[in-house]
Length: 282
Image 1 (tube, rainbow, N blue to C red):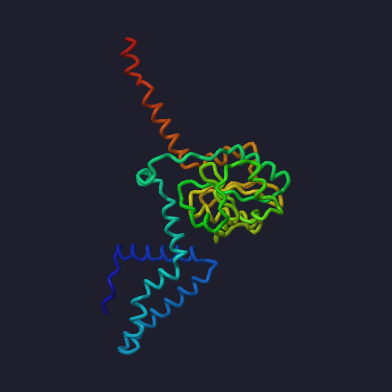
Image 2: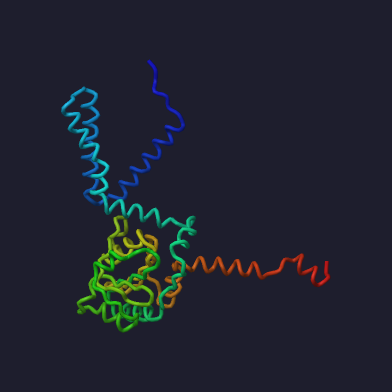
């Protein structure tokens, strides 16, 4: 009996398929998507068995279902696929040149003074707050789902939005280009395993940063602690005196600015050989 040949390429093929399946499982965990995937797999297995038994009618019917299966998967899993592609796009450190092509101008960070002052006051009064600082990612869907304001960023306005009896306090405020563009925005809640002590605000802060480069500042209503979320991770209980540094360290142009500064310093600093030649020393 001849065995099916198994090569290193087959091993790589199986490994990547398993990796994709694991990624799909993690992406759809906590939703009804695994049940849909199970139904699709069952239909495909039945179709393979029916073809092997030469059942022409049933095979043709199931074949038509399988032939449009890819389109059906795209339609059913549109939110999950979108999040998956956004997560891939977030790992873009090696593709900064693409970002420069589509973003000709540098995006400046917001004025942090009113944000820090408002968060400090709200932390003392234990007023819950959720502030999204937009960067390069498109948050149009989040903004359109809230109440548009397009108002100048200021400390009194932030505190007024998140006042407990205010009609806009429930949800997130989105800050872009030193303006509060929307309030009462609904953020996607993370499906990752997080501590049970995390409330809805902290889970939403992690969720939006998993699929965008936004920076989220959270003020806990229970403890008054201030947290900063970025890239799917959250830093809890940030002291107000360190809040500016915790936020600015995640600015998209912060790393590029440091790199340019290092290059400029390197270009300005003369080489030892050139210095010795100019002074006549050896």
